Length: 197
Image (cartoon, rainbow, N blue to C red; front, side, top):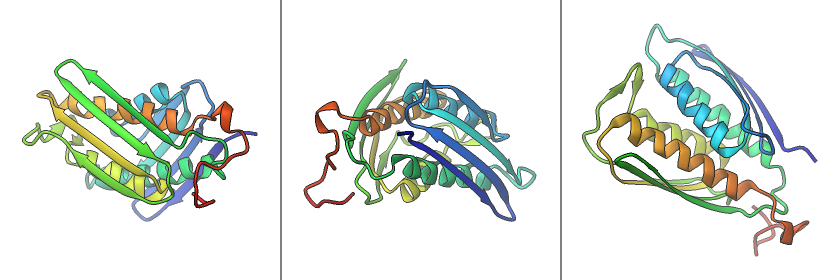
């Protein structure tokens, strides 16, 4: 049974298409118009082993905010759709990823309850190309709200802004992959004592 999500989201500010296959091979086709964001979404697909297509046409003449935010919202919705009934998955996932001097620790629960805890070093460089580094938290907030997952992201240290952001996306990819994978010992079982996720 395929686990594919497809979301199209159109507003006066953006037009977004996201397709995700949770059981893919890490093939990606990303185009948001924000180069560094494309790079981060590519990391998400490749390290999560998700086949991921993202096509966003946004009001970049204003700034990158709407494009980044609306893409994250559509990505969260597509991820939730692809999870389906969540029967037989591991549900929980975590991963710690170093990137040179930076370290990211990510833990996720595909709980159906959106909650974000996010910490990263203060005073990191404000921009990476056209990417505003304060948007990293907002991406995670937007994703969590639509995917309906509990997500804890902690970067205890790091100096280089590129490394600080990138290790978060790599760790997120792996944590989501582990949580969403099918558990061969739990086929047909919903991983919840409540009987719902």
